[in-house]
Image (cartoon, rainbow, N blue to C red; front, side, top):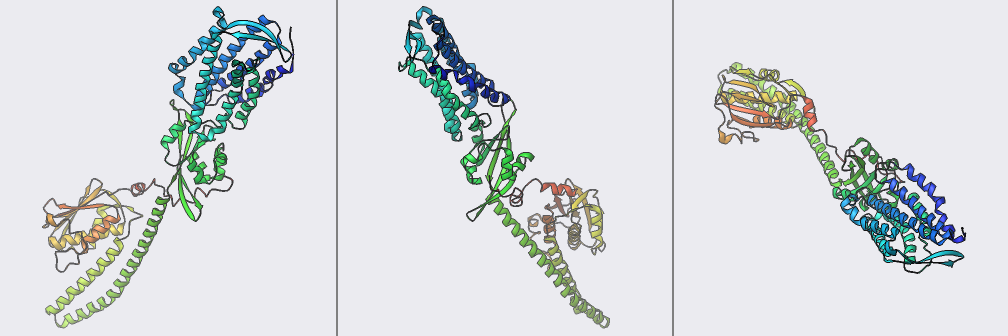
Length: 586
């Protein structure tokens, strides 16, 4: 025989909300973080519990009421195990899934529940009697110790699950709403159960509590988007980050962040949490570009008369199996670096402008000096017609030659001071032979032993050879032999002259250094400057035949090798405008 009352309505109500909740869960069955099947089992078992309580209240037979308590214990077992598994999934505590922790925790609850159902020696059910409550005939039970042991074990399992949720919330305060809804949904039925155990009510309203908790469960799914916004191993993220960060799940949804990123982007937590990658990219294009290309980008933020530069880096998050779990977007303040590079560019531009002025001055000086020098030489030749053996005229001729040499050195220094930005692939031997023809070599001999190509500026390399050849002839004599050959990643120029004393080799490349009273002291300086312009290293050693040997290393054969050395670095100041300044609506 059945009985009906309004009291039964809360116990039956969950069946109405269960189908849409199960449908939403089924739609998310491929979720990589949550075991959706566990949540579906939890919801189904809770509704079954509520319905079994409704049936137990509706029947009037006391014996049938007694055996329907079996459904009470079985439902409690499934609900608690599912709740615990959900807590482990949500908090990403993989260590709790191991049998060493899982079994000791649930074993007492399982054994106690089984003994409660079997009721061996009436340890669960002592005295049974019926009573009328709110117009319903209910079974009043004097419970034995096994009933309370089973409930104590159940509450321990529930406490551990609550601990997992709350401990995670303390380190992930952005999920306070999610955790509060979870705890609230679980607290309602267990609070009513506790009221029954304490004797505050004669009817066990635990099943009705599930009806009251379903709206909170719906809020958990639809308002706090627990199936869309699930934390991603935040401890691992914190260990990696040194600045602002966003964590995106496998769907590209923001699931975690820190206060620093909110400060950088000028928005609050609620605005960012739950945003999709598409929404982020619309407000901050640099984030979408960095995520799609896997490269870093840079953007600027102007606030309170202060311009800050931030570099955005995106890295993938994987689990222990190597499967993608999402991605981390890091925001690093590179303002100091950007400002330093901007100053460096300004300084470089200033130096280039100074070099151009220096070269213009050198050309002007050359032009203004060569004209009167040509006139003086013409007059000297006319004077020599009448006085061929006049020593004073020979000294004038030497002075003219020295002035001419000084003009050449000044021009060479002005040209060599410019960094090589567009090198060519040149045949080393051909350039050496061309330079030899430009020098008054007298009876000297050139041996070209080089077969390699070099990446260099032809004008500067020619000037380098010319100065080395002049230096060899000047110090080695008119009949000196000069050799040009290959080195691993470089080349050498040596002669068979007297050489350079070892204690003077570190000085000869200094500006103004000379052992010749008539020398300018700029010839070898020009060589050093040319090497620096190409980013080569020059060293002076003893030649094969005891003369001077100049070795140049760090020399590339292909111009592309020179360009590759400078590739790969992105200047934040150069890419500031690429990422776009954050737009409104972010």
